[in-house]
Each structure stands twice: as C-alpha cells, then as structure tokens.
Image (cartoon, rainbow, N blue to C red; front, side, top):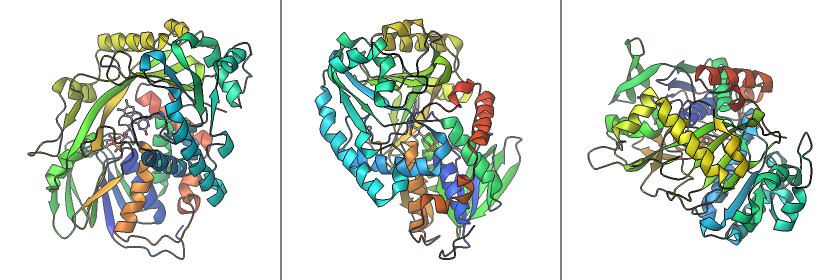
Length: 478
Ligand SMILES: Cc1cc2nc3c(=O)[nH]c(=O)nc-3n(C[C@H](O)[C@H](O)[C@H](O)COP(=O)(O)OP(=O)(O)OC[C@H]3O[C@@H](n4cnc5c(N)ncnc54)[C@H](O)[C@@H]3O)c2cc1C
C-alpha cells in the first residue's frame, strides 16, 4: 500500500547479499513500493553469522561509548517494532566476577543515561515501549536479595525481574561474584524468526525480485550498474539497476574490489556453541559474566532457549575467538583475508572433534560461574561465522552505511539492529521516497500482517534445513 504523501521513485535498486542487512533493506524498499532485486548466493535469507541478542542499550559492551549505546537502543526499538515476532522477551543479567578485575559500579552511570533516553523515546511515541516500563529498564541486586531469591520457587510463567532472577540465584556461584549484579531489559533475538519474517514479507511483494542461489561474479558501472550473476546450476544471468547496495557481510570487500570502491575494514571469525542442560527445569534469563576479552577469564555468555537448550559464548581464544581470527584489509584489496582453516569452516563446516572439544570447553567455562552447568552436553552444530567491522576500530558496534560515488552504498552493520536505519539512510540519500513522519508500522504493512505462528512455523523449517534444533526457532520468554 502506497502512502498518498510519498513520492515514489521509478528507479531500480539491486541489493547483493541477503543477510539481515540486505534482507531488511529489501523488506523496507519493497514495503515502500520501490522496484528492488535481492541477490543472495545461498538458498535462503539471513543465514550468515548468528544473532541471539538485540543489544537494546549495548550494555554487554563496557568498552563502547554511551553514544553508541544510545544509538543501539534507538535502532533496537525500531527493529523490534519492524520485526515484532522475532524478539524473545526475557531480561539479561550482567555479573562481574572477581576474576574480571572490573566493578559493577562502572555500569551504573551509563544505565541511568540509557534509561532516561528510553523514557524520552516512550514519551515521544508510546509504541516505543517494547522493553517494558522505562522505570523497570534495569535493577541492581545485592547479595542478600539474591540469597533470599534462592529460597523461592520460580513461577511457571516468570514476569518480574525477581521471578527471572531465581534460577540465577539458585545456581550461580555467588562467592565468585562482586555485588551488586544488575538485570536489564535487553531481550533475546531469534535469527531463524528474522529469516522467516523477511522471507514471508518478500514473497508477498511483487515489486521485489528475489534471486536466491545466485552469486554476483562481476560488476560494470555504466549509467547505473550491470550486475553479472551465476546460479548454482552454473547459468549466467545479468541484472541492471540504477542503484547498487553491497550488503555482503564479511565478503563486502570482494564486491568493493569488483566495483573499484576501496574501503578499509576488519573481519572477525567467531563461534557460539549449542548445548543442552537436560536437568534444567527453570526459565533462565540471559546471563553475562564479564571478563577480559581474549584471556582465559574472557566473558561467558549464557543465552537461553526452551527445553534446557542454551547457546554459549566464551570470549577466550579456544572457545568463541580463534587465533588469527581478526584480520584487516590491505592496500591491494578491500577484502580482509581469513586464514584458510577458518574460511574452510564457513564454506564446508566443522569437523566433529573440534565441535566436541570447543563445546566442552564452553561448558567448562560456564561451569566456573554456574557449577551445575557441568551437567550440560554439546547439542549440535555451532552457530558461527565472520562479521565485518568497518574502519579499524575493533570495538565499534554501532555502524550502518557508507556511500561511494552517486549510486553505490555498502551496508556495514556490526549488529543486526542497525540494518533498518541503514536502509532509511539510503532512501533519504538517494531521494527514493519522501517520508512523512509515518510510523514503522505504517511503513511496513505486509510485515505487520505476519502471523506469529506462521513465522514460527517457517523459522522451525529453516532451522531444520540448516540442521539446528527447533528450540532455537521457538519463542522463549514472558
Ligand atoms: C558468533 C557471533 C555472534 C553474533 N551475535 C550477534 C547478536 O547476538 N546480535 C547481533 O545483532 N549481531 C550478532 N553478531 C553479528 C551479526 O551476526 C552480523 O553483524 C550480521 O549477521 C551481519 O549481517 P549482514 O547482513 O551484514 O551480513 P551476512 O549475514 O554475512 O550476510 C551477507 C550475505 O551476503 C551473501 N553474499 C556474499 N557474497 C555474495 C555474492 N557475491 N553474491 C551473492 N550473495 C553474496 C552471503 O551469502 C550472506 O548471506 C554475531 C556475530 C558472530 C560471528
């Protein structure tokens, strides 16, 4: 449905790469009624590196500026409104172990700023209240309060912070932690339900041409762009477009090289492990145990799903991080080169022994803070991949889009929640549509019409096709 106030461009837009960045841009452009082609080499959308956390406030990253946290907050709220069926509504606990060397007080000032920004966004538009009441955005717990919660039984449907803190109180090794601990309304995010939402929307928009299983192999800039593609069956096709968007994630540099649009960037390979804790009866919040990145005490992250399935990150070199896993572009190419052994993991997958060894280490790392986690076992293929970080600051987390020439853009999202803002910036920069202060909901009628059960069904099918447990696609939360 086209707004009567908008000014629709007859221009055509081609997007290379159907990860969360390219797929979200395609959803947004298609919903505006623009003529868009999305070219993705894999058989389905949003199948790049994992996404489990919305980063609604950036509180997991102590090293980033408050400005980046506020940007992530705003972007996350808009994204939760765009993809309402993809959010797992449960909070995140942030604990600072003695082994970390930091203090919980460091989190305090920033939380106040983020809470006040959230309050303001809700005052501006009640629909921004996707993270609960602003007054309840976070809460600190003393050791006494946690010990009192350890005596309680978790209700079948946890609602309050107290309810969610009960499993943490019962199972975390409180002697290893500095107090207070904080709980914050940063929800989870399901990569499979994002993939399902984007696919279901684009399948309904006849102004979006979806070219799956099609790889871009060459580019020519000639009064717009001529994009040469090759299908999985080896057939060559070409696409003409006025505007070209490079949304190739960690492979963005290859397309920059073909387009002759140089750019500095970093690429980092990381992995998280899928585990099952069969004895676990409670509904956990996400839990972050802080620790210095890349050291044996690196941060441990527990991300809950239904039926005792948990995804684990351990920011040590032998769990989530890898030797030579962070690489930079050079003067000859905008594409950073990962070591062959890591590139091979992306292309052909993992060998069973490495999956087992790294998953076990992830479990042991978590058991340092949650001793009963020793009962957990490895539960299938890791969630892994490489992500780009534009420029040369490896701590950058809020980034969106850059332009080169008059009709070439690269989406350079580090966190998935930046994708919608990047898409809006491209529309504005190229004057493709005139926004008239319509809401996220009004701009995306097809996405808004998606049914939660249909999204979950499709997400489970995608999880099965990619050989991941169904639980990763199911809704989890209050
Ligand atoms: C372990 C790990 C955990 C993470 N956790 C989170 C999290 O919790 N929350 C969060 O927001 N972010 C998280 N991230 C980051 C996030 O996954 C990435 O930033 C995000 O997926 C980037 O999306 P993208 O669309 O830019 O790239 P991608 O998802 O990599 O998509 C790029 C697409 O381009 C396609 N492509 C490439 N070359 C071509 C070509 N020549 N022709 C056609 N298609 C092509 C690829 O097949 C791919 O599908 C995590 C990353 C990792 C590694």
